[in-house]
Structure formats: structure tokens, C-alpha cells
Image (cartoon, helix red, strand yellow):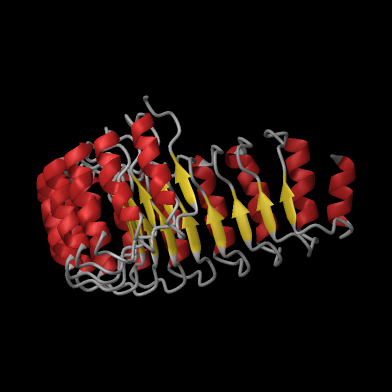
Length: 386
């Protein structure tokens, strides 16, 4: 370790990436961060999972006040806690860091205030990862800062227990912020009311292109609000709605929106208890929609009749290139419908049929269709039940 520190201090460590596991060794941490004061080659510093604690962060912060080469800093899985105060003071001065990963650092309660004050003045950070910090309703402080921040384009607030109240504050930001393009909100228990707030903001927001809402217990009532926004929103291209208990009724609302939406290209609907009726709604929209290229239906309950509906739509649809149908209780009869489509479909390049009830007859149907299909390059059917 001493050799490495000397290399860094003497600017003879030529790699632009430094990943260290110093496990809160105070002597090493102090010497390392002293070396960073003068190093001008390292741009990516990975100190994740080091248990740096408050004192370690204080040493690092002193170095960041003078270092001008580091652009990406990963401090995930540490125990920063109150140390965020020292880091925040440094970030008010530092003008090189553009990517900051602070996930799993207990930056909750009043601690998020310190970082929020940074975002009011810092114009360098473009990517901010705060997932799993249990920020909860204190997201109000972060929201106030983001109203005027013009640099952050990537924001990860997943696993923060934001809930409806926190989403209300954040939604006000999204009505005026024109810079955030990727927003991760998964596992925040937003429910119907939280999605209602978000949906209102999406009617005016034209910057978000990537929206992750995985596991928020949205259900049918919540997706009804979001679907109204999707009818007019023209910026979202990636939408993750997996694990939200949408069921057939919720898919009906969403499908109506997809008939007019022309921006979404990737749609994730896995684990939503979508059955035959829901697939019929979705299939009807796919006969009209020409923007979706990737559709993930993993772990639903499509079954034979549902695959028949979907296959009918794929005779008309020419935009979907990737289709995930794994874990959907598909049988040989359903494969017969899909195989007929694949004989002539010229857009689908990837299909996942893993974990279904496809017997040898179903495999024969697939094999025959592949004799004439010239576009399918990836076909997966592992762990099938013969």
C-alpha cells in the first residue's frame, strides 16, 4: 500500500482509475488522501464498501477541496452518516466531480440538508446516486435545491421510502426542472396518491426520458393517472412498471394510452399478474402502436389464449424487436400461434421463452418457423417443462 501511495503522490501512478479497499485503516486513509492533493491523473476514485465513517470522510473532503482531476467518485456502501457535512463543504468548492455515488450511506433525516445546500451552488455534478438512504419526507430539502439546479441529469432515489408525501414535493420540482433525463424511483411505496402527483408533473415535463417505477404498489387506480399523462407526454422512452400489481384492469388503462403515445420504446411490465384479458387489451394497442421496440412480460399469466391474442397483434406490429415471454405458463398450443407469426414477422430479433410448459411438439413448431424466419437471432427456451 505504501508503494501505491508513493506512486500516487509522485504522479507516477498513470492509471486514471483507482479502486481501494482500505477498510477504515486511519493511517492508510490519511496518507492516501494526502497523496490525492497532488495527483493529477486519477479521474475515477472508487472507495465503495470501505466503512470510511465520519473521520475518513473528513480526510477525503480536505483532498477534494484541492483536487481537480477526479470526475467520478464512488462512496457507496460506507457509513458516512454525519460525514456528509464535511463532504458537502468540499463539494461547494470542488469543480471537477461530475458523477457522485452515495448509495447506502445513511444520509437520512436532517443529513440530506447538507447535500441539498451543495446542489444549490454546485454546477458540475450531473449524475447523483442516493438510493437506499431512507431519505423519506426529507426529500423536501432535496426538492428545493433541484428547482434551481441545472446540472443534474441522472437522479437515483430508489429505496428511499419517499411515499406519497415525499412524491408531492418531488413532483413540484419536475414541473419546472428541465434537466433531469433519468429518474429512478423504484421501491418507494408511492401507491396511487404518489403516482397521481407524479403524473401531474409529467404533463408538463419534457426532459425525462428514462423513468423507473418498479415496485411501488401502483395498482389499477394509480396507472389510470399515469396513463392520462402518457397520452400527451412525448419525452419518456423507457418506462419500468414491473411489480406494481397492475392486473388486467390496470393494463386496460395503460393500453389505451399506448394507442396514442409515440415516444415509449422500451416497456417493462413483468410481474403484474397480467392474464388473458389484460393481454387482449395490450395486444389491441400493439396493433396501432409503432414505437415500442422492447416489451418485457416476464412472470405474468398469459397462457395459451393470451399468446393467441399477442400473436395476432404481432402479425400487424412491425416495431417490436425484443420480446420476453418467460414464466407465462405457455404451452405447445400457444407456441403454435406464435410460430405461425414468426414465419413471416421480419422485425423480432430476440424472444425469451424460458420457464414455460413447452413440450417437444412446441419445439417442433419453433423449429419449423425458423426455417423461413431470417430475422430472429436470439431464441431462449431454457428450463422448459417437457
